[in-house]
Image 1 (cartoon, rainbow, N blue to C red):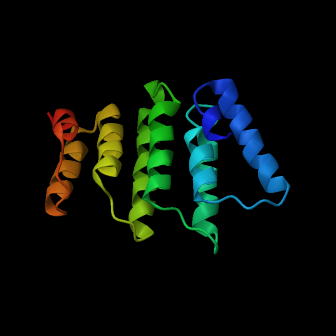
Image 2 (cartoon, rainbow, N blue to C red):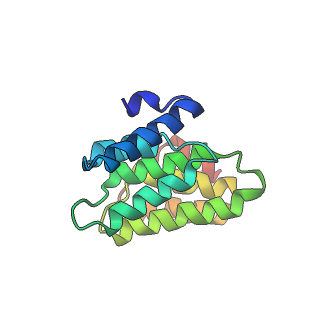
Image 3 (cartoon, helix red, strand yellow):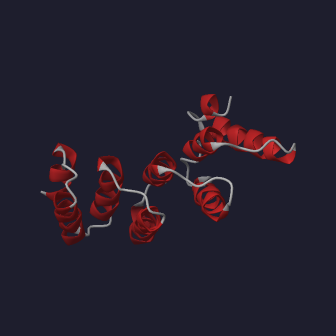
Length: 152
């Protein structure tokens, strides 16, 4: 039901409420429920919850986020706001999230690098986009046309 609620703002809020209700009734969330609720946080109002849920998972002894959870958080950031005057701030949050993924011992893939490059491009940090491209090449993650488009 939570994943079915992730397409509209009102439904997204309902998904978050269902998630919190589930936790309040002592039903432990799993990776799928965390992924679903994080993916529903793709609005400016709900975006901070995606970070909160990721932090909870990182601090948990029972369940650690996987690369898919990080994808969901990065996607929520990408789609959450009209970045406008928040470009630098949002870029820093995306960079911190990417750094946490690496710190947690997970291996960045094409999608995580794409989110990082896109955030840096939105912030007007073109040299940093080129750094992503260089890092991808050195770690043997093959850039796609999207990464090259951002770098050009």
